[in-house]
Length: 402
Image (cartoon, rainbow, N blue to C red; front, side, top):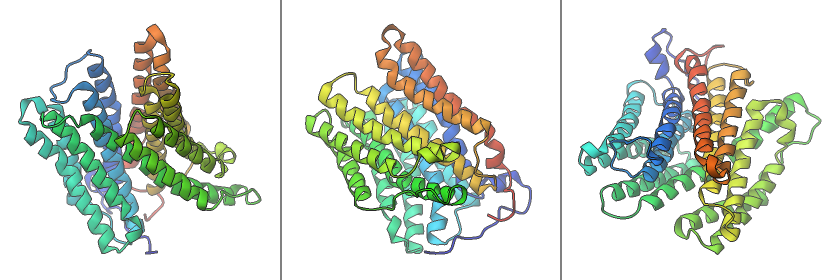
């Protein structure tokens, strides 16, 4: 394994230079701000309470901006921070990083105001960021000869394809918006299953070794883990290719059960004393629950499909994103890996958002109230992250070198 690069944040107190010293800084902040603002806009657009100057119909714009806008920024922030550890190469910094962030922002604006410009122009501007980012990641992995993480390039390619398919519908070329959105969500969920499955037991093992060395450690990666990941991949592919079928429902239940068994072997209950660690288990648990609910709903038809779907999006993606962003930000800026009260409030807010969004279809006449409160809790969670972590993301690292 290559050595972790030892790089300093800029010695000067130039805030812009510090902000552009690592990918997680601008991308995590951008993702949080867009999540806090974009979701209420989506809900207002979906419920005809607001009109947006976009070519995208409400449901597709909502899915597009959550999966490819918000999700794209989160994935970029994570990978640009993780890849130097994988390859031993210096991270993307300065002007190149600023250019990448600018492309992401340009895409958000282009899609939002796409009604006032040619559809092809909006698509080109929006797809520029994922296209360039795929090149950046592929170059780093190839140059560092870190072939183990080459599947990350495939995941980024799938996000690009899903994004492209939504634009084809906006251009009235094909009715591919829904499948494009499904590809985006499925890819993000699979990344949570893969990456969350790496870091959650690893961090738990390290924490237990320090705090309770006599306790049982998380089970090592074995055949059950391989089966759970394979079953998850098959279930997600089936959901994209053959939605609304009983066979897909069965596959989702098998995958959800396997992920739940996998999670139970990671000693998450023992980690409940540290919210910064326990929230990783909670986020992973939402993946298992989401697949179980989707499969159960397919077989029993107890509610509309949005409730189980939001267990995977608001629950798994929303929670795991905040779990990774808070932990990575604290660790890479020299803060203690301990959740303060504000961080705990972030976790509580995103959990309430997911629960309320899933429960909304069951609330009858109070559906719109539940939906609005769920959106408010989501915005509160990500708004609190932007507010409470702003100083960490824009200021120099504490405790010496990174």
